[in-house]
Length: 135
Image (cartoon, rainbow, N blue to C red; front, side):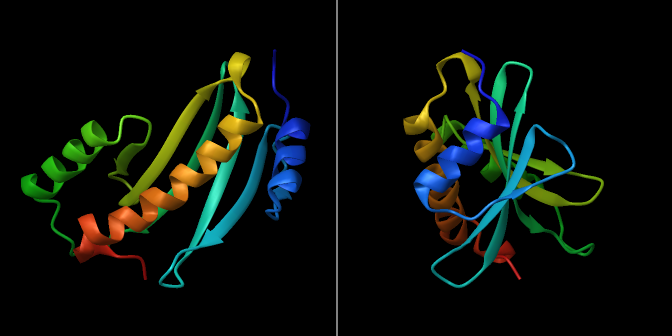
């Protein structure tokens, strides 16, 4: 079964989260606020065989040292959190949190899981990587 952005919009409504449609018909935008009142954007896209949830966690300042210890911690968290992927865009220095689900088995329960895992991951990063908490 192929999932469309229309189905994702219906899931957002059912979940009672606001969302916006983008110029790209396969991408929807939303967001949330964590327990410390930090705002996060969420991008949900339906591309190829996947439904992808992505949120930029934090853009690191230019003077933030990307030490090997820091990068090892990210790799360790990727291992500990098998569904959540942490990545670092070296060009714009943004730490990204993402999840991917196969379209053919994607349903409302996985949609809930995706949003729940994104929000939980941001809360956990506040304690795991305190030196780069969101601005």
